[in-house]
Length: 280
Image (cartoon, rainbow, N blue to C red; front, side, top):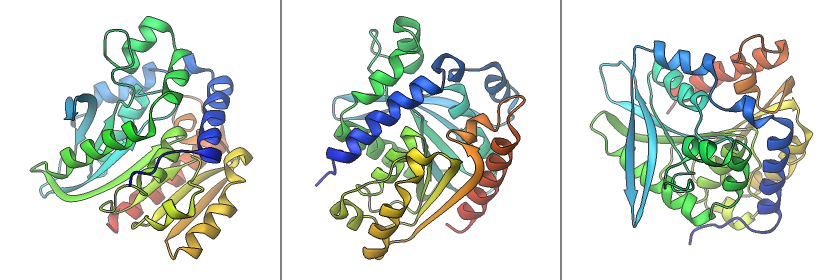
């Protein structure tokens, strides 16, 4: 049975969306020149693809590594800001490390013209993104991710191994998705709210690796409870906290002139992530 967000977790993600929108200065977090430049300068192949399921279509950005053999795939779930150039840049960095990376625009269909993040921003402003994210039906998110999983796992260049990752809102969704897909090989959840339902946790079959900011008690205060739930269920959960960093350090640490703590956390988290991917 698909796991739907209810009760505390749903409220927590809604609150997280509001906080991220308010303190993150949404306009500044949208497509940035520095993020777009990375994509423009990349030698790797990136493209837009449409993934279909039921009566729904989802636009995705996928980047391929320059490797000899088939590669493991990573599904990248975007932040509360939607599918931005920075998120697409993450797929490029994963491809640079040797992995196929695909990022679905889970807001696809929300814009007045039926498109997603960019069209919604143009039509209704950047402030509309957080509200649109909060209105997404959990079962639709799961169905979208299942379709993306099916698509990428069957690519001729994929070795059949698929992992999931996500940031902020996407970090919570990546953790949640492991409760709905028993075939995932691993989850890399960046500063997102974890599940709170023991029955959902029981359905997890892959290891979960958490990446958290030291100055982010809103999220960090939930770590002890999920640690206990995962331990009681006999699941693998390995959280690491990067002291001095703030929420969103993976993006903040990459932008021009970053705070030192955010850059250090971002660099260390990337190194850890790539080491973990090697073990898949």
